[in-house]
Amino acid sequence: MRTLIAIPVYNEERYVEKVLRRVAEFADEILVIDDGSTDATPCLLGKQPVEVIRHKENRGYGRALLDAFRWASVDGFDWVITMDCDEQHEPAAIPHFTEAIARNDADIISGSRYLDTHDGADVPPPDRRRINSMITKEINDRLGLSLTDAFCGFKAHRVSALNRLDLTESGYAFPMQLWAQSAAANLRIREIPVKLIYNDPTRTFGGPLDNPVERMAHYREALELAISHANETHKIEDGKPAISFCADTARCVGA
Image (tube, rainbow, N blue to C red; front, top):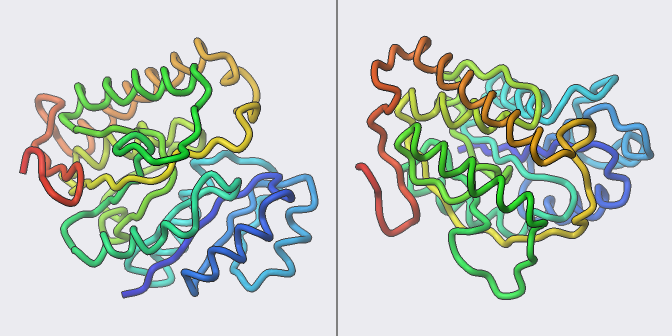
């Protein structure tokens, strides 16, 4: 069983060396996707014993993930675990994902910052928590899922399952497409708890998405397009595919 750790980065000179050192304690095969960093990140990556994909310009978070998925598929990996590089995802949680992988009962294992309460958990910016909660509920209602955290980027993906999807979204709305297509393809989805960490509540999305109203509208539009595309691709008639969704390690909803 080969598992790739894939880490999108953009201007992470403050964190990248420390994060990669910690990840290397838990994983041997690491891929960093540098999405057009303009700070010292590229130079720092050149000193690390990791594989690197470098975008000459910023192409978006979703595009970085798509490149990681293609790399994992072409290079024969069985699983790809994605995580962020801003110290908001704990490398020490990687073994929790590998343990869940070993159960062999899921195709996507998604971290949830809201599944369980962690001691010392940070408080997210109010608009981010509100939008996450509202969009997660809409995803659940539209797709028949039982997610608690639709936006957490700390995930494990079965590569053979990803190969069944037609993912194209390059921006922050990538989760909309992932959930719609995963539900349409009847992928088995499990959530596991991860710690809620917000080191820098002032970090921005950039551009119009910094406005909560516009961000919410963008996600809703992306979800609508993703569901429409998934219905076309997978020939769903009612928009609510029957899936097997595992909410935690103890129970399955809809199985």
